[in-house]
Length: 548
Image (cartoon, rainbow, N blue to C red; front, top):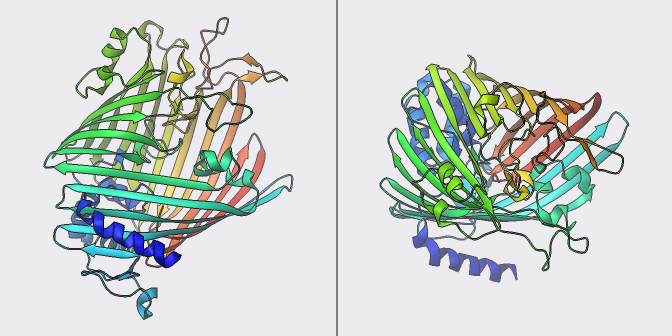
C-alpha cells in the first residue's frame, strides 16, 4: 500500500514540477530567522526588514550571501551557524540523498552518508529553471509538568507529514505542508498549554488527533508580487510581541499583492477570519454550526534606509456580509471608507519602526491605535484604545546578544461594539500575546555556540487587571480586559490602568536545540512560571525531522 502511495506522490511531483520557484515562502518555524535578525542588529544587512515574516527563499538566500561576504565580522561560533544555514539554502554546495531518484538527484538515502550533513529528502529535482523537493516532517513532542501542589502531568504527541515546495524561472512558487499528530500518552490538558494544540479544533474540541496544514502559491515579476494561501504570519516590529499578526490564533487565509523596490515596499492583504459562533447541541464543530463571515483588510508601506525601517499600516475588520469592494481596493484609506460605510466596522492604524543608531544596537517597536478621542488623552477614558511595544536589541562580544522589551495594551483595546468585529480569529487575539489592561517586561539573552539554535534565557514579568465575575459567572466589574467584551451601559467610562483583579506573572525559560545531523533536531525547553505566587515547572523535548 505504501509503495503505491509513494509512486502516486512521485507522479504528482513530476507533473507539478513546472509550477515551483524560489518565490515560495520559508515558514516562520525555520531557525534562520533568528540568525537574520541578529545580523540585522549588527548592521550587516542594509535595507532589510524582519517586520513582516515569512520571507521568500530567494530573499533569505540574498541576505545569507551578504552575511557570508562579511563573515569576518562574526565570531568563529557565529560563522559555524552561518555555514549551516548557507548549506541548507544551497549557498555552500551540498549533496542531497533521496528516497526516489530523479535526473538531477539520484544519491540513495540508504547509504553510509545518511548520518552526514547531506540533505535527506523523499524526492528532489533541480536544474537551471525548475526546482522541486519533497521532504518528510516527523516529530515526537514530549511534555512534563509539576506544580507546588505536587500535581504532575505528561503528554507524548507524535506527528507525521510532508512538505512539498518548488519553483520555475524565479516567477512561480508554492509551498504545501501538512502534518497529522496523535496524543499517544498522558493528559490532553498539558498539551493544550501550547497554542498550536489549543487552537486546533480537532484536538481541543473534538478530542481527536491534531492536523495542521499550511500552503501558499506565489507569483513575482520584477517589482510585482502576489500570493494566496494559509500560513502563519508575523507582522509587527519588536522582540516577543507582534502586535499586528502572530501565532496566537490559528493560521488564516490571505490574498496578497505587493510592490517591492530597493528601500521601499507596499503590501496589501485581505484575510479571511473565523467569526464567533454558538454551540449547537453542545458541539463547537459540525455540519449545523452557523458561523458568520469575517474579513480583515490590511495594508502597509515601509521605507527602508540603510539605518533601519519606518512603516505605516492600516487595517479594518468587517463581518456578517460578503466581500466589500471598498476594502478590496488596495489604494485606499480604510478609516475614511469605514465612515462612509456608516461606521459599522473596526478600523485601526499605526506605525512600526526599526532604528539602528549604531552598528550592534537596534531599537524596534510598533504602535497600534484602535480608537482615540484627543480631548480625553491622559484621562483614562475607556475609548482611548491603543497598544505599543518597544524593544532594544544589542549584539555583545563573544557570540552573545541581549534584548529587552516593554509592551502595554490599554483597556478595551481590540474590542468592538459588534463582538464579531473584535481583533480576533476564532476568539483569539490576532496579534498581541498580551490581553487588554496589561503590560509586560521581557528580557532575553542568546548565546550562539555554533549550531542552528542559540542557548536562550528569557525572563518575562506581566501585570494584568482582569474583569471580575460573581460565583455564577456573571460579569460584575468590567475593566476592559476581555477583547470579546466591550463597555456596557452602566460600566465606568474612566479607568485606572490595571484596575480589576490583579494578576502577576513571572516566566523564566531556558531553551536551545542541537542538530544531531542534517534534518534531525532535538529541541529543549524549560519554563518556571509563577502566577500570583503559584509556581509550576514545565519541561519539553521535541525530537523532529525538519522544522515545522
